[in-house]
Structure formats: structure tokens, C-alpha cells
Amino acid sequence: MNRFAFAQARSIPEAAIAASTTVADAMIVAPDATEGGGISIVKAGGIDLLDLMKEGLLAPSKVMNLKDIPGLDMVVEEEGGGLQLGPLATLAALAEHPLLRQRYAALANALRSSASPQIRNVATLGGNLLQRPRCWYFRSQAYRCLRKGGGHCFAIAGENQYHAIFNNMPCAIVHPSTAATVLVALGATVELTDATGGRRQLSLEDFFVPVERDLQRENDLKPREILSAIRLPKPPARRRVVHVRQGEKDSFDWPLADVAVALDVAENGICQRAAVILGAAAPVPHRAKTAEAALTGKRIDESVATAAGQAAIESATPLSKNAYKLPLFEMLVRRAILKAAA
Ligand SMILES: Cc1cc2nc3c(=O)[nH]c(=O)nc-3n(C[C@H](O)[C@H](O)[C@H](O)COP(=O)(O)OP(=O)(O)OC[C@H]3O[C@@H](n4cnc5c(N)ncnc54)[C@H](O)[C@@H]3O)c2cc1C
Ligand code: SF4
Image (cartoon, rainbow, N blue to C red; front, side):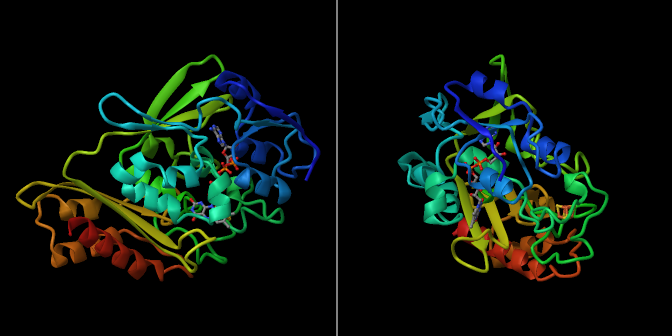
């Protein structure tokens, strides 16, 4: 790891001024990660950032810590019944927060199942949404792949067992955030604040950037911007939300596949609106539109859930070593729908 200056930000604008470049840009500008090149970046829990620095993929001259900015770790009830989650709230604090457990239990459960207790105590929600992909070629200094500004994807013809089964050309990363799968199903929005205090809001779904829009970044964070809030709308009274995941291990690892389903079921038992989001499936959380269409206007039973599971993987284009994900997602979608409808 290189030598770098370390400072504590006391306000969001101060942090935004320090965020002279995004980590995505820094990894392209200074691919050899040796000089620092005047790059200044922000740190939350530091789990992902320090990994990148230790792996020799990133060498900032300055790291600005966000952890002491007052109020950025709060959970606040909003007018209208939604919740505002501070980006500096840890995964552990959110997983145990009474308002989340009561109103957004699927999110609390997804956070509780992410990583390990030690990591959840340090990792923040903002950092989780902004963590960089786990593709092992991306994480190795030895491979300068497309996402790092190189000319080739090594995974597509290589070791791709943990990679995407949707929208996987020309880069087959899967989005690494488990929380994002549920947050997109819940219709969450994000707020970004710049160095002048100016704010913009967009849906989390639109904040994530698909490969056809930009190959080298996973989100729309700009230089000198700070993720300042994540907002959850008030859930309709009859909404049921379920998150399920399957991994090689129960803890200390990212899932192989995870699914969030949100169903608005009317009193007569008919599904009026469905969100079916697949995680670890595509470069961004993947909305399975055909599965949503297979549920809307139907009374949910085993055959409808089975048909939706099949529809969810209809447009998949698996690579040489990850076709096992197809039956896995089909099963998880079916299971999540039946659990939500129960
Ligand atoms: C063994 C292991 C297992 C894991 N399993 C899972 C899992 O199952 N599911 C899962 O989702 N994750 C998993 N993770 C990933 C882990 O949860 C993330 O690395 C962590 O949440 C990142 O949060 P952080 O606060 O440490 O972010 P940091 O490392 O501090 O920051 C991450 C990135 O976000 C930027 N940043 C952070 N906060 C802000 C902000 N407010 N505004 C602007 N930029 C910001 C930083 O500059 C950096 O680029 C696992 C990690 C490990 C090591
Ligand atoms: S999948 Fe993406 S990140 Fe991985 S090697 Fe290919 S281009 Fe790089």
C-alpha cells in the first residue's frame, strides 16, 4: 500500500471537495497504483476501499474519512411515512433498527445475512452500495481488463462461474451489493450532495449504470459528490416483501444468487403490482420484467409462482461455467413469491 494523507471530514461539502475523483475514475487514471497522482478519495467503513489499496489497484494521495460527519449515520422518519437512512449507518445498526425490522423486515434480513458480524459492524450502507465488483480478474493487478480501461474481458472466455447471466457482454460482473437487490424492489431513492451543497435525487435503480451506458463504473456518482441519503417510500398497506439468497457459505461471502420480491396483493387475493429483482445476476440489480408480468393480475398459487420462476430466466445468456445459476434463480424466484403470498 502507498503512503497517503488521512483527514476527517466534518461536513458533507468538505467531504465533497475532497472527493476530487471517484474510485472508478481513479482506477482508470492510475492503473498501476504507485504514485497517488494527486488523487483524493473518501472512505466510509473502509472495507472495500482498503481492499483495493492493499491489492495495489488504487493509490490515493489523500483519504478523507466520512465517519465523523454528524448525523450521517441516522435513521429518520420522513413526513408521509417513509424512512431516510444515513449512508454512514452500519449494516449491523440497520439490521437491528426497530423501524427497519418493523416496516422493512426483508431489508433488515438481507443486511443481517450480508458478509459477517465483524464486517457488518464496520461496513456502511453507502459504502455497500458503492463497493466495486468482485470479479477476480478485476481484483487482480495482473489483469488490465475492460472495466479498468484495458481492451479485453478475461472472464467471458475464462473463469466465469460467479459472473452474470444477463446483460453480460462485453463485461460480465455481477453487482456486489445484496442490500441493493431489496432496496430496488422497495423503490428506494438516493440523494447526492455536491461541494456547493447542491442536491440531486434519483431512484436507486437509475443510479446504477448498465454496461451499455458505461463499462467502467457501476453507478452515476460524480467527482465531488457524496451519497448523502437513501430514502425508502412508505410501503402500501398490503405490500409483502421477501428476500432470499443462496450462497456457497451461509456467512462471510457474497451470495451466488439472491432475489427480492415485492407483491401488492388486493383484498380479493389478486396481485396488483409485482417487483421481482435478481441480485448476483447482472452488472446492475436485474428487474425480471417477464416474471413481474406473469404475476400481475393473477391470484398467486403454486402454478403462477412456477411460471414466474421460469419467466424470470427466459432472457438469460449464461456463460461457459455459470449455467447452474438458471435453476437456482428459477427456484429462488418461485420460493420468494410463495413466501410473499403466504
Ligand atoms: C468476506 C466479505 C464478505 C462480504 N459479503 C457481502 C455480502 O454478502 N453482501 C454484500 O452486499 N456485501 C458483502 N461484502 C462487502 C461489504 O459489505 C462492503 O465492502 C462494505 O459494505 C463496504 O462498505 P464500507 O463502508 O466499508 O465502504 P468503503 O470501503 O469505505 O467505501 C466503498 C466505496 O464507496 C465510496 N463511499 C463510501 N461512502 C460514500 C459516500 N457516502 N459518498 C460517496 N462515496 C462513498 C468510497 O470512496 C469507496 O469507493 C463482503 C465483504 C467481505 C470482505
Ligand atoms: S467481467 Fe468485467 S471486470 Fe471482469 S474481467 Fe471482464 S471486463 Fe473485467
